[in-house]
Length: 272
Image 1 (cartoon, one colour):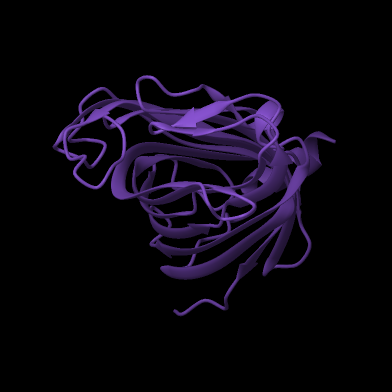
Image 2 (spheres, rainbow, N blue to C red):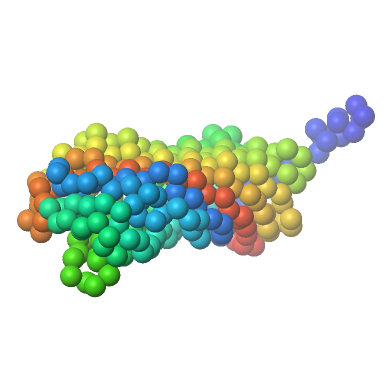
């Protein structure tokens, strides 16, 4: 036993390629834990699971590409679709941006919050099997909220595009020759409106995308993993740039979700 351990220690460490490309995909389901929206300071607090029919499971898809340089520096580009559409019958009057949807209205609801994220990571360990990386991300939000009566006579919409800076950390640790566990998190708390991408508003925003995963290396090019994720955040405040808005510009929107997904990572053949 001691000889085997000594031999393993003396074995040469596997070196990482100078340049490596990786493609990662996840597929699973998303559960809305809680979700509320208030449009206008006199608006109704609209709770999506209770009022808007977001009490089902939804398909979750995530795609990303990674470029690793010399085993230390990693660039990541991620695409996250998120578009929840429901149809409900209102059980109470709901006011959104000064427009009231009466009780018993047949209501079509769309909540879309897809985003794109670019990240940079620096690995403090620099090993081929262990990773402790820190860095930053820049996320581009692309939000659309739509409330429409089924007959089309009542409608309120809200759209928003803007950058969101985030801090990022990623850890991967081996459990054996092929098995491993890891965690990854992107997050921010932004009390300043300019950080939220809208210099004309007084808002406070927060976002956390945190996951725990366990995986196995199937081949030299392919890993598969199970991923548990919390994805949530929101913003509260009043925008001064409300010329195109029906209300007073106040918004409070908070979303908390959990996802379970299966993932696959494919390493392209080394370029060096």
